[in-house]
Length: 476
Image (tube, rainbow, N blue to C red; front, top):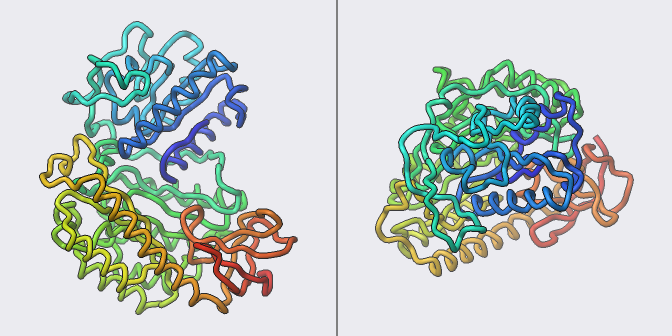
């Protein structure tokens, strides 16, 4: 199994693995030993699509150098390109969409009969791959084998009516994370229309997953040893609103908080429009919810934000951050920002820089604007030159690095609850409640005897680049 892209994609990968395990298949980490390889793709931006195609072609080589018989391409790439993909990537034996992971076992069975499959697991003969879906465009996939060639293939970009109903999460999952933490994907698709984003075209509109299925899944994860549950969706706090339940997310948090064994519930991708006073209160006062809020703001200039199709302006974002810190100054705030959006002036970039200096976020990620075909922003005038985008990206990153270092120094001497993620070169490595795995700050401890998945009280003693150093106070 090859998984590309975000943590939401990772959950789909784990469900694919779960469905394969339930169907009786074994899993190998060595692609040379695999009879079948599944590449779960990302198609969010052009670079991700190129990486997906490169991974497909890399895995296809095992048909000659290994045991590979069947290559299956799943996820966002087939979801975005529903027509012509088989002609562009004849190495693949099946293309399945993002919601079709439950049928993976049956598809493997039927591949042995010589059938081939389109994006939604519908059988097609090898000689006849039918066009599927709504009206066409002329965008084609960037295939490195054909980058220097002209192609007549036309690929389809659209939002599919077939996606109107949300799939029910499969109970079986094979975790690709350490067993003490796991992601819980609570919805599919997106109801926003940000002018730079391809996600609604790929995944369709926002669909909340079934409430009971999610709580059952969370209980199963807890029974398997998961202590930290990380809630993800394209717009997490929107949960339930598509079903006429404006308090659906708060209801879900209450239910998840009651599950024995879950110690931390971490909230990712909280669009600012849905972070109200009650959710802030939950983060501040509910002992099961980590004092952590990931809120993608994307910019600070009102004009840029409006052009992006965002609904929260710079002043409102400042007020939101003030409200969170007023509720509990220990809540860690993370955000993401795009630099170089079409029309962004030097003065508007300085607005973003001033916002960062004033708000002093605990963690922030920065992305260079990517001009994606089919998005409204791709046709906007005043596209910012690539050189200017790179300069602004670097400036924003350096600014935030300085802010993070100052924030870290203020943590020296504090005692934090530490979750051990493992060991590295004779040291325990893990995180405080203020940090999400893989993207935020790590804490390193000297010594041995720490148990992966164990909680410890740790005193912060120093700063090591972007990370922290601590010493053990006690286990808890």
